Length: 213
Image (cartoon, rainbow, N blue to C red; front, side):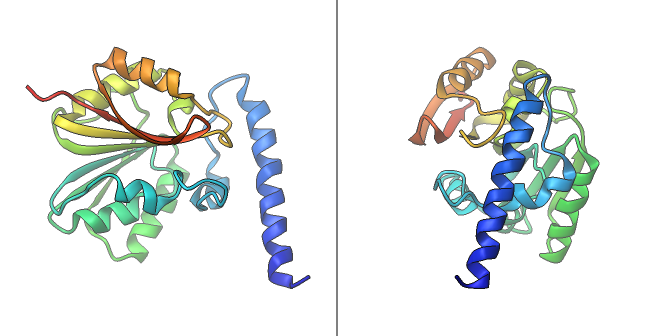
């Protein structure tokens, strides 16, 4: 067997082992992916299409000059490609509760030579987001890690412009996986309209829209 294949198998096995430990630890309380595991979060899951960066970004229908919220940005897996899409006239606000994750995201943004990303160290639902500012928002396998998901979704709803879209991605491999029914119920309580969904119940991208006047 080739060395490259051995290394890939070892990485996959390590990822599975870490995921199992993280899942059991997370049962006791909300436990965001620790910053030292940023390398695991940065990988596109090879077993599902809907969690891949290119798929999520493509379906956002981004335009130059848009303002995008990367909520729970982690190490910036989506921050960089989104910032490239909205261009210098646009802006990406990357929010994360862990300084280590923001540091990694800053490194990736700097390496890409991007100057249109702002970083905010905060938890979602703390009232740190500006009202009616964003055209798009992202929640990529983050919803289940938030202490108060209802407050977080209300804050994101208020931060979006009328007609703005929140893209929620959930994958069963994530320890904090939230099902379609849970996402839809929380979104409805926050005032969102349920939009298009891609994938299936174990791995999906769900678009939620803030109603226009």
